[in-house]
Image 1: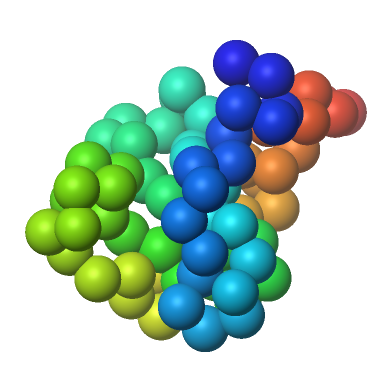
Image 2 (image 1 turned 30 degrees about the vertical axis):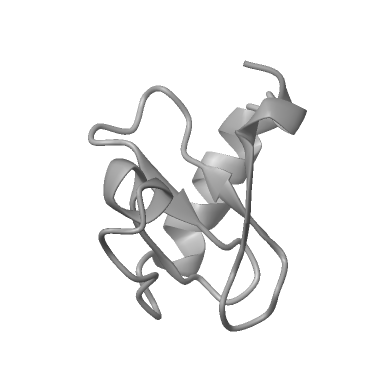
Length: 74
């Protein structure tokens, strides 16, 4: 997937930015907001079965996923 393909097109209910799909190495797949750290299970959020939860991921986890999405591994 390209970095652009990780945008899921669903706005974060808190900060209104697009949620991101986690990298393929994260199992189960989640969606998350890299600004306010909200998120939830990918399938449940996409299908509207589950709301986006606040503080779903930690700042460190979000940063790691962003680095992997952007392929900036050090």
